[in-house]
Image 1 (tube, rainbow, N blue to C red):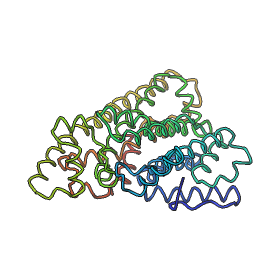
Image 2: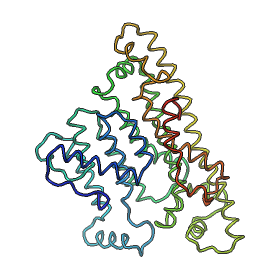
Image 3: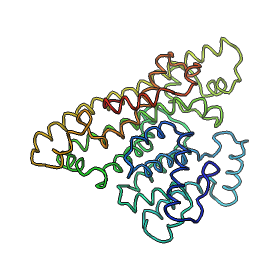
Image 4: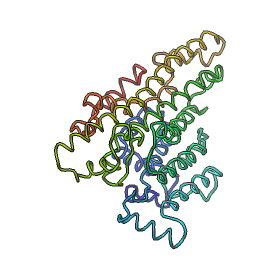
Length: 378
């Protein structure tokens, strides 16, 4: 549930509800997920509110936690008390809340009982469904299931495990945005384009999948200080840490400031660089594959245009597509840009997670977003 970060929407007119919900989620993303806030500026207006809801859903579900491995934390104690007395935890309650809320609005978005939902995310998703925008509840449920599993397992044995997590979370978000932008209200010409080529359909889905997996790897590298300090949790692959002779306990003690000997710090940091390098390489491989497939997308679009001269809708619109690629196909791929910039920063700073430059916010994102949008690259 959205807490103090988003004020409750009172019983007011539908138009005011939607406006207030959009304002709240836009502010939430601006502070909590700036890359999504920037990307929202490239989403066509009919879908923009729904896009905000999808990305805010990601942010809100990622807030759900059980206190990590710290049994003395307030959240851990509360979860343990509730679990022992009632048989379920606060985490279970929060995931059930969102599962029930999704079922409610997807089963009958036009029901009068859904006129006063109270939750900004639910309000904007409901409006998207009422406007006949493409939304698939299965992607939301897969996201919830994967995130819940992560809270239960608390670690990744291998890089492939992080990729599986990425497929169940970030890739699902990419699929949701792809489907949203391919709504008949928004992109009838591109729907025609895709109907001409199952290969093109497979390519754009594959690209979204690879970007989602790369995003997950980048996020888990970036999140090492946060998870280790606040949740007593390691998000790097255990197999790689073992390979480079660094234990979970050593990394936790390092990030939490318990190792004061400079030589010991340097030794662990040098070992950690190797783990980060190997992990980041896998993310870069996924991005390279996505870019290769994007080149195939360009070629496939050109082929379709040449082979369908009588499709007046496609022929009328394709001249307006930047670099021969429609906005609604390319825009979901822009979620790769923050990960690309972060991996580049890692490489420049010798894969040192503690380098001061990696602690700074990425101020170049608006510029690169516009440049990559215009030149159709990510």
